[in-house]
Amino acid sequence: MNAAEATEPAAPAAPLLSVRDLRVSYPGRSRRAPHTEVLRGVSLDVRPGETLGLVGESGSGKTTIGRAVLGLVPVRSGTITFAGEPVHTAGRSRRRALSRDLQVVFQDPYTSLNPSLTVGDTLAEPLIAHGTSPHEARDRVRGLLDRVHLPADAAHRLPREFSGGQRQRVAIARALALRPRLVICDEPVSALDLTTRRAVLDLLLDIQEETGTAYLFVTHDLSVVRFMSHRVAVIHRGEIVETGGATDVTGAPRHAYTRALMLSAPVANVAAQRRRREAAKRLTG
Image (cartoon, rainbow, N blue to C red; front, side):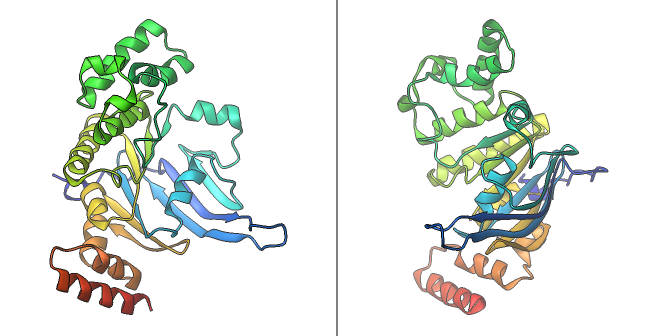
């Protein structure tokens, strides 16, 4: 069963993550060049225990939202609230404390892990940094490896000894180490082959069912977002153009851009693919 087919979590009094009128600009290439506005008043919520799929093409601003939530890019205006606390103005020490509840899985499993650390050291590092004893951290590492279906001896090996899918499992285990309430998944399967991709998605769904962790799932792939998400937000040129339940948005999209994304998805028939892409171009002008 995928997330869209599951019963949607009951809406609580307040969302776990709330983004309101978020604006982010990047400086130009020279002092006199104007700033480029990447996000233009974005608002969205993620409820406890749910997955919100954030979907859009390359350059739409979807990754910037996740980076703003994590404090990796400066916010020009708007607010980001996590568990009722404004975090868009949080300093370095507060950000470090927030990492217990707010984690990330990045896109590239080949660059997101320190190549000089064993897998065990990679997983133990955040635990020890937050006060776990080395002995307890070793026990927790064994449990984390088991949860992501990696053998216990993986703790003694380096990342280069694993496949891309296995490395992404390590990255997921690292994100789960502190038992976070929200994980930002930034294109976590786009670098993987189709078979491995499905296995990693199933793993994320199993973990959510077991732990109640919420996901902000960032992707360009509507088929992935349909499989993973309870709700979907579609972003285009820095603005949210459509939101709704995953089945509604992916099955009967209202906005022309969402329909164009659906038509742009690859199909096996070459002639049909060409017709779909031509129709998508007409929808987006």
